[in-house]
Image 1 (cartoon, rainbow, N blue to C red):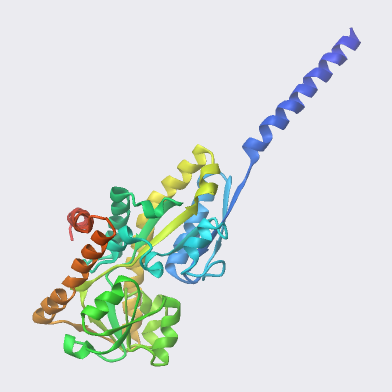
Image 2: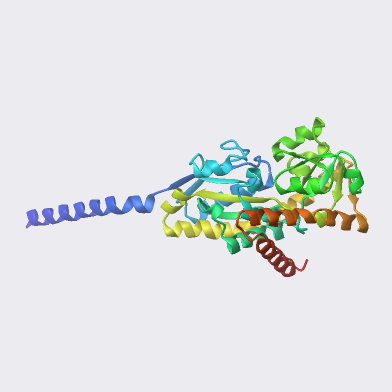
Length: 344
């Protein structure tokens, strides 16, 4: 009897061990990912990226752990996308415009549409991506996008007219270079990380960018004036993408966690852009810098001057077999809807 009980206990114990061997790895597995962010660690957008990584870990009950590498330390801004597809990083945040011509559908988002703020711009570019589902992004999993508030002109000397701007060397990137050219200035392509030194050394005389650059990239120290040219306010669209193979390997419940968190973080980034714009303007004015409003006539002249940038995009898109006019109309429709929804 005792021998039978002992044998039964051994069988039960062995069964428990086998069950543990087959179930423990699935429930205990931790998914670890690297995240390359081109913003410096002190920047509000890098902080938002870190907060997203923390939230994903929390919502996944610790099953997903993401290590953020800010400041382009893992891959620089221009190579971030290829770094994700090539497996150097699992996730990456950078700017579509740093790879000019590679993302023609998404390029439309950066046109000078007169974006009122970063929250609106961030919502619009995500809605546009969903509406167009561009094939140019099929090699990655797009987690979400975000975009800054209106790109304005920041210069070493005041600019109140197209005549003042004519011939000035202005830092720009992507479609903003075409905006600069249309306004009669000379575009000089470079990423934000190089702009401070270029302004300091006189390589450029100004820069187009959101107001946040005055503090986030310390550019208030090397300019003296911001021209309030919101009528030509463009944005720069930023991506957060994930290696497709790593994404496909995730179980469905963890995919849902990442997607739900990413959806919420569109507004987190948009609001962070707007808060940063406020802080940037405050920092600039505290240094004694000034703002220069455009007269009604100048405002109309600037808006008319950049109109060819939009028509040029439509033409170039059409040559690539895309319906450029339809893409621009989609963008306008989405933007009008967001503006009405926000009461702007």
